[in-house]
Image (cartoon, rainbow, N blue to C red):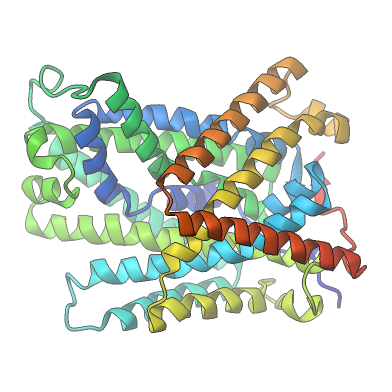
Length: 446
């Protein structure tokens, strides 16, 4: 039987997609980023999160628009194929393969938090067990993954709301009078730039378009609502984090410092497990579910050898077992051999941004490529307004690339250039082989 993304189970509801989106956005990084942001802007840190949400939503406009028009069975890969053609789609596939080996980072970070509670266990064993657990969960169907994800995200949100609940009554009454915008507008903007990473990520649900019941309605909704909801939650956490203790005491410090101050010991443990640790595994689970779909469609289109074997879908569960196993095995390498997976992920960070900028620009082609579907979209707008949004999104993307490059070591920038050359070489060779026969992997939802 030929490989096809048409065989994927279309079972994900809006609730399931929200669980994936929120789980991807809320990462344990908020534990440390909050203190960094407070150091930059003081008690105005909640404003920085709300501003970051606006920037993230503007940057997500292309994904939101395209997902409101068609079902993308291959996620962002299909979007690239639709808007920009073979070369960008192929290159995005290469970047996807490399960037998603960072799955092991979440397992290792989870182990670091777990060691505070079970110091007698080896770090590598904990990371191995947690990565294996979510690999198995994803093997047995996207519906099983969604149930587990909803349970994790529900627990995580309760833990984070407990932080707000226990702390909001202890916020200093002179909250707005002292230590507000400590470094003026520049400090507020710097804080916003940092916490963008804590609010970003809901776009990952685009990779689950092929498994959604109603993708053109539910995926845009999940991206927008989850981004706004998480930003509001973070803003509330920011009020407590910066308002209970003096700003000088919490600036640059882990969120756990304030949690210990406001929570009973038992609740503090629940917060650290349900907040920080569950944030990591929710991201791990979400990424493991989404990442294989672009690779699967790439197999269908001939970008990879032996597509029937690599793109094998289990007859019952309709999950890409071989692709999932690839990510699992590669994820084990840094766990057992101490490889610096963070640097490997950084190698393609600029390339990922470049792909996003190119797709942002190509969104202008959508009204011509799919005129009737575009007219039916709830986000349909006049061409001049679309052009303004495209320019704004592209400008934000270029800004991100420049900002990223300014913080990178030269060897990482060189690594991105090498990856770019290698990726383009592979694409050219594969196209010349005549084995790439790209099918239309989007579907108009009437």
